[in-house]
Image 1 (cartoon, rainbow, N blue to C red):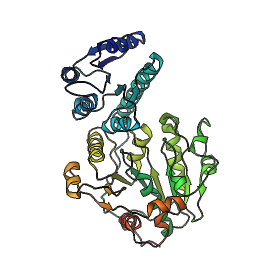
Image 2: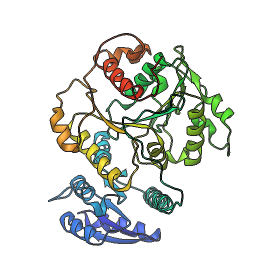
Image 3: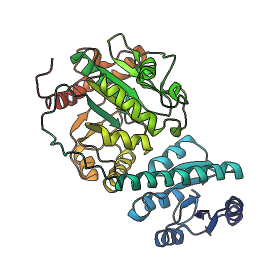
Image 4: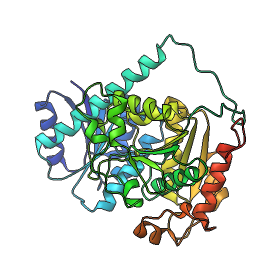
Length: 398
């Protein structure tokens, strides 16, 4: 049984949602004033909060943002429940920090299913963190950012970003392609997204199988993983994500560990394109990789999202060994100045990629810009990132 706050200025709907929750075995605190609710939630943090959007004084998105700015409620599971239905509202809610978004009218089954799923996810994350804190194994050796590494050891790189349209997948694909030109046939791109694989699409590949085909195989072997890996005409290898969206929990932490160890043992570089959500798999990969690239779009909402992500990582992890910020202008719209983005993040931008008008054509043709010798913003940017990675190797690159 969980303690759940419900905030809605519609008294009738408030009571209805409360009744649904109580019938589902939960305790509901019903509040019609969002400003009062903010104080009450911060004083006595519940297990979950359900917020309406259209409320006087402070709307649900503002309330959600206020809760996310407080360390005490930074990780509180939040569901946005509203009569507004456009996809832009959903994206805005998720960018601000909501965990789920439901449209009114909502059925009891739909509501309780979302509630139970979020509660279960919160418990499993806390358990995982506790297990990690109680681990008796010695901490990993700290590696200096500029220290040389063994030329034989695989270098794992994670590309992540939690706001839509940041160009995360484009960066991952082009970085993999650039490294493959230096290390032919020794680079693997791993698309671990669950919202519909885009990496294979950018390479004009139509794989018959993806990592989803590994689900249900139990303790599958490296040979089985190899069957899911497809090869591009350039020699670049890719483990694709399913083309259709799938639930994040379909990719288990045990499966991710097997994928990571197998591909790291058989490649010189492995680039992970990560889902924009803090799943156990995303946390595992970010804790394991040698390099993590946080892709930030220079726009207000995207930067705010990046700030919340960094606050979360600084308090609860994951903590990548080497982390760099990549400011990627993925659209031609007006952008924030780099200095503004850096002030917001409280960190310097390590790499900047300007808007590349050639990218749209490259996607249509299935030929990543980094596969050629062009000098437009994307190939130039990934070249700088690749140089940073390879210059730390103990021997000259091929």
